[in-house]
Amino acid sequence: MAAVSESIVREYFELHGLLVRQHRKFVAPNKRESEDIDFFVLNPRVQARRGERPFILSGRDLSGIHKAVVVVKGWHTETFSQAVMANAPEIFRFVEPTTFQQAAQAFGDELDILKLLVVPALPHEAEARAQSIALLREKGIDGVIPFRTMLAELLDGVRVNRNYQKSDVLQLLRILKNYEFIREPQMDLFGGRRKGKTT
Image 1 (tube, rainbow, N blue to C red):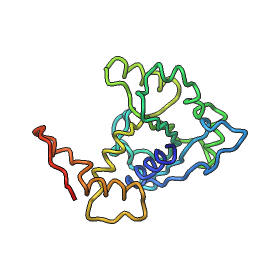
Image 2: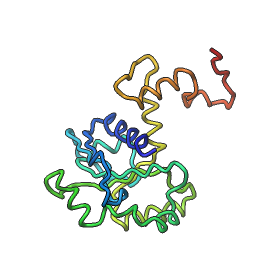
Image 3: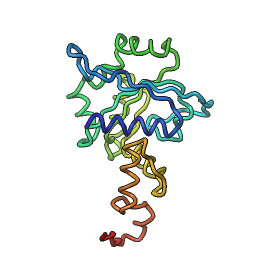
Image 4: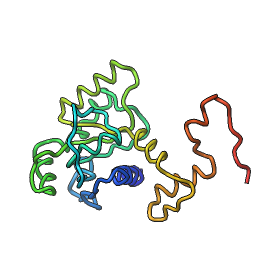
C-alpha cells in the first residue's frame, strides 16, 4: 500500500509543476522506516504568496511553496485524530532536528524548507479538527494535505480521451472514469442513480 500511496503523492505534486525526488528507494535494515522522509519537492517557479498560508493545503496553495520535505501516512483506514497521533509518536520523527538536518542536505541548506504531512483525513467535527491541527503545529508540521484532496484533484485533471501510459496511477483513474466506476461530481446533483455500462 505504501508504494501506491507514494505514487499518488508523486503524481499530485508533479501535476502542479513541482519537481519530486524520492529520498531513497530502499529501507535500510538498521533504520526505522517511519523515520525516513518520503519525498523532497522543489518548485522551480515559486510565486510570492499573499497572506498567510493555510495549514490544510490544496493544489492552489502549492505555487507558493519553494521547498518541502514530505512524509506520506497512507493508512486509508482512520482519521488523523489526537488519539492516533498520541499513540504513534513515530509520525513526528522526521521533524526532529537530527533527521531534518540530514534531509535538508538534499537542498544544500535548511532555509525555507517546509515540513509537510500527507494524511488520510482530519476529524470532521470542528473542535476535534482544531485540536489535531494545534497538535500538528506544535510538533513542527507546517502543513497537511489530505488524500481526499489529492485524489479529487487528480480525478478532475484526468481526461478519458487521453492515454496516460507513462503513469499507472493516471491510467487507472482514466479507465475507472471511462467505465463509469467513478462519476463526475455534478452527476450526483439530483441524487439519482445512473445506470452503468453493461458491456
